[in-house]
Amino acid sequence: MRELNIAVIPGDGIGPEVIPQAVAALEAAAASHGGLRIAAESFPWGSEHYLEHGHVMPDDGPERLAGFDAILAGPVGDPRIPDTVTVWGLILALRQAFDQYVNLRPAQLLTGVRGPLADVPPESVDMVFVRENTEGEYGGAGGRVHRDRPAEVAVETSVFTRSGIERIVRYAFEHARAAGRRRVTSATKSNALRHAMPLWDEVFAEVAADYADIEHDSCLIDALVARMVSRPDSLDVVVASNLFGDILTDLGAAIAGSMGLAPSANLDPTRRSPSLFQAIHGSAPDIAGRGIANPIAEIWSAAMLLEFAGEQEAGAALMEAVRETVADPARRTTDLGGSASTAEVGTAVCAAVAARATA
Image 1 (cartoon, rainbow, N blue to C red):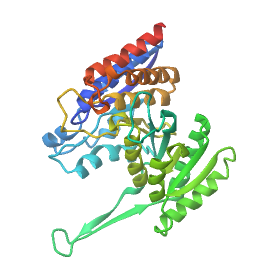
Image 2: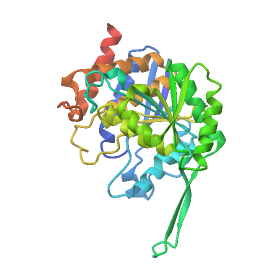
Image 3: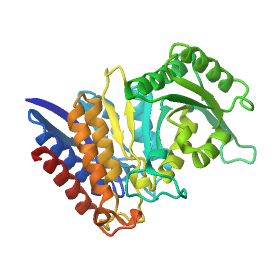
Image 4: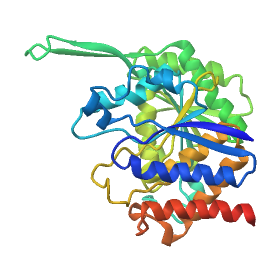
């Protein structure tokens, strides 16, 4: 029997509510595809851990996670703690420790979901964002001097390397080719950022030359956000730097109808280290504990986990169950105009997986 060893980090806010639904969905998908078993171990890291121990994750956290096949994480964040502490204390730390240089975020308008764009059919919103995940604007280089004085100065330095740009751009083209997608669009701002973005553009052009079968174009970031709204069907695969990709994908989630439908994968394509899968919607402390959070983004992330782990059939079955569940108005949470609870949606997904297995 094949076994996937999954490290689970429930996180904060709605994390402990949506993560059990994602784990149950993983187990249901495994059970429907004989010979696969999910072995999950939970790690109680996050804001409460910080308040009790002074750190979001223990110093040996990456070492303890290194032996797992994958990591399934809930959101991290708490109003009592600065975001810089929680983000750098866990998610960014793991991305860099495990060289998870690809952040993969699909944005799709699922059947039955009413997006904010008027008269746009579901097939017109089907984008995949390939975001550089370990350097760029979130490299962490810089500092502050004259702290707490009138002359205080903060320096934030973006770090762009030729090798870092090349590997993320190449991944975008390889992903497009493998998925049968037609075009890769590069997000840039080389008319104003005089050094990093011209290098980005040069490397993009060099890599694109190796993929004559895939169309490509570059688009300034400000024009690109307008294009996402006015012509979403013109975008297929978008490759972007860390900051640009972060912003674009929140807009993508909004166009797709809800942040509750926004999954992600933080990938080490070399598979030397575990990859991390996590919904991007945040911890939502305003609705935590009420049982109304949408678990679909976390479950969708779990489907991406299965596919990356080589369990394509189980991952595809789970994704089809997600689509079937979301298409039913009675199985939607409040963010999608329904009244179903977090647990009811999770149960519906698991039931749909089981039904497909016996059909």
